Amino acid sequence: MLSAARGIIVSGGPSSVYDDSSPTIEPGVLSVGAPVLGICYGQQLISHLLGGTVRKGDKGEFGLALLELCGGDSDLLHGVPNHDRIWMSHRDVVAAPPAGFRVLATTSTCETAAIENPERRLYGVQFHPEVVHTAHGREILENFLFRICGCERDWNPGQRIGKVEEQIRQQSAGRKVFFFVSGGVDSTVAFTLCLRALGPDRVHGVYVDTGLMREGETDFVETNFELLGHNVVEIERREDEFLTPLETVRDPELKRHIIGEQFVRVQESIIESRGLLSGDWLLGQGTIYPDTIESGGTAKASTIKTHHNRVPGIQKLMQAGRIIEPLADFYKDEVREIGRSLDLPAELLDRHPFPGPGLAIRCLCSDIDEHVSQTSEGWRIPVRSVGVQGDSRSYAPVLAIDAGAHSPAALQAEATEIINRLSSVNRVIAAVSTREPMHSQRVFSASITRGRLALLRRADAIVRQMSHASGFDREVWQFPVILVPLGAGESRDSVVLRPIQSVDGMTADSVAMGEDLLRHIAARLIAIPEIAGVYYDLTHKPPGTIEWE
Ligand code: XMP
Image 1 (cartoon, protein in one colour):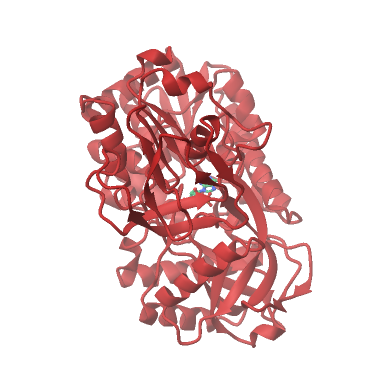
Image 2 (cartoon, helix red, strand yellow):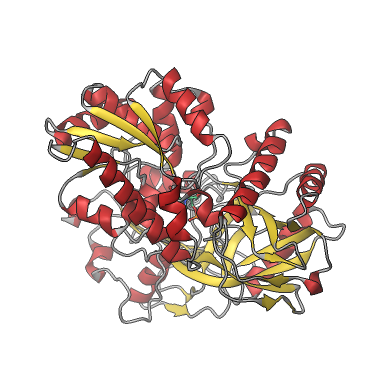
């Protein structure tokens, strides 16, 4: 079957070629005649299968690096300038490429950043051309497709909407679709596509106020769906059903499960109370492709965190063929593009993404009571925040460094260096302003209470308002504000600012915020007596995820 392929890409992954359970390919794939490009683990696997040496990395390389070209002309790196910005995420590395290969590029920590054997049409890169942070990644993939594989640009994205609508009509097969909209881009676009494909008589929408939303969100949704003429959307206020079961939970994954299951329960009760159970209905969801990958929904990517659209109740509905997800194959930027073609208002499409479990995953809990401790790099904060290394999940404490008089850009460079060196932390934050000195800070045992949620909502609203007024919100892709049970004395919570730049949420850069804005925001927040400190997250993804849980 592969002999008909125009080209083959062996992708990256969290495995090491030396582990027995690691995914592999038939070595014959490398001689079917089609060009092969190995990316990250793919390059290591090709090298390993052809007799090269892969060295187990003791120290990772995560984040930005500079590509040094060294191999002269090559089709793969055609047009890529020397010293180009690339994105790395690996521990193992090819120490010696197989016979017949030559090295095309290196970085300061990787002597085989790109390799090729043009006679056999085999290519490899250790970095990730598929992520936006690699400056010429798109050109490298285009070189592979068009220069090496001889493919042609003959697809037409304009036909996409018609095709998706046709799929919706086919999959729904005369049934109705019931949607829970969140006011976010994904569910609004998915809902609008269903509405166009099936008409208002077959599509219903409900917005559930979970009590985990940002300030003013329910009003925003109500106003916008009215403006869109979608009087098929109703608002349901169900705060208690979410907040009560969360009150005693501290484990991040359990939180997600409870919210997901609660969603299903509330959804079922709504569906039942409207008599939709008796009819033939489907549940529509705005799930997009990265949600599926990170929930372990693809065969080999391990679970980084369980997405609320993939909890067991939903899985059961999926198995029964009762879920319809028109956007499941698309990335966020494509969803926005589809939304623009559907004439949805920019105010809605340009909103920052907001996670389904809402403020719950930004309200960190803790089951310990422990002081911060000093290390040679800074202060170890004994909370657990989730991160991603390779393609797998890590839970680790956070390191706080003193912001001092350093600029956010200088702090970021320091943070990247620390994270690459230490495998014991997956996140570095800068202490911008604290009520008490760092040595007196401690992590308090805490769960999600209505009081902490209200505090987070208030801090989040202040940050949103100030970043909107300054125009900073247009420079970032998302700006989570996280409440961490870190403080001293009566002030038992701190706020972490996490502005990031991204295209699809799969990888992200921490953004260096202007110093004036940072100081202003910090001054407003620290004026709230319950807030003990304001911190600034300096971590890229990987190794930190965008959200903290
Ligand atoms: P992470 O934290 O995994 O986030 O780097 C990547 C993007 O996904 C969003 N996110 C979620 N969205 N339900 C959602 O609808 C979830 O459970 C969820 N978890 C993370 C996150 O806000 C970011 O945009």
